[in-house]
Length: 601
Image (cartoon, rainbow, N blue to C red; front, side, top):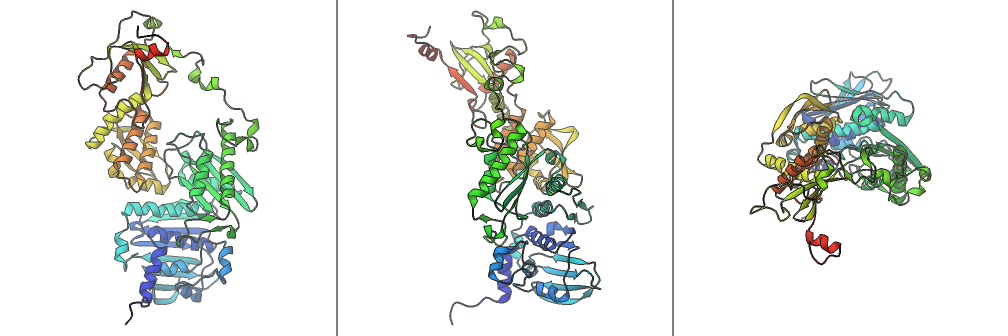
């Protein structure tokens, strides 16, 4: 007997199902797309145990007659494709029936459908892909699909699903993506017996305004209120875009949504175009919130790279990239009212030539100071007399064994440059300290030690801080409560989709800093390697950065010397936790060399 044989049809169907149905969110995505393709105006979703136990999607679409219901559960059944060439002209989400077969192969599925105007519905029950019953039923017009015990016959796949909290987050993300692309459809979802959450049909008539209304429903008013609207076209390629203004960036990239012909996609090309547009408007650790909708001829891109149709490949990638980044960059220029410096090709943008760039003198004189005022005298207790020779030296402790090489007392505090750099005289030379970077290092080492020991000091907030997020992102945060507690944060659900911070590390005094730290933790914990020490250190560094004194916070001589002393006790006082230098020293020999003297005075 030979070694090659045909697979049993049941085994083959389970393998094929695995390419489409990876988790409950995969099932929901397919069922939602079927409902949208059927012309639904209302879609209801309910689930238990994050879809593992049960998942139901009901719509008020066209429905199917008994014959179509039975065909829909057969392999390779479709209402969309007649010839191979139709794949290049497909304008809908999928081939209704293909997904149902895959889902039915790994679950216990019930399909109930009633065409518009029909006297009754038709109900089919299937288990592991085999139909068990088919009979008339009483049901509203439209289609309802119920999926129970997902992966009951493929326990290996069931074992590798994540926790209910994580799977629920992915389930809600699939729902948000479908709702955002279809603002004219009313979506509602319900978990178990909890109160349902609804995203009502957008009231705005124009599509950009309708998208903005739906986006606010999903991400909340804090994130969805001040979005920039932009777009453009090139041939049959069209773009509609909502994106953050330069002043409303966040610390997580998890709030970016991309669509091609209404289908949610993952595209590195589109993400790179987005970040190129923001390159001169954002710090490295800040990210835009966005929703981008591309429309082009179905033959100009390929969504069949993977069975999930999540990845997309464009025929003319250069044209897509150029349209996206230029449309966003132009909107950012208009929003900021200035051409950012060092942006090649910006003059090519329509209207950019008329914008005025900020002057160097204005940029060098923040907080109302004159650009020529290099030694700022706004620190408490500052006196010009301290700059004269012969004033008493201010010692920041005596040098002791084990002190870092840079610590060379005695120090005399001389003043500040640009309200940021602290100037000291040290052993005949000059010593400069970046007050923010230095304080950031001190706070980081103190906080990181507490995190490593599992005992960061936290305090209950007098007024819990609400944080508006999409339901999927809020659920993702709640699923990581144990990790967050290691950083001194206690979060809990708030309302139907948001969350609130109840406890936080004791040194947070400003709500803005606290919310920023929560977003940074969301970003760091979203990685598949979220347990890595490097990511936890990065989150701790961000928290320390938010608490540290800022560039223009006033520091007097006592505070400056206290900071210097605290930095002396750090493991690595020469750099902030992000790697930037915190100090600069010019020895007396270096000063003599620079002034052309034969030796130190």
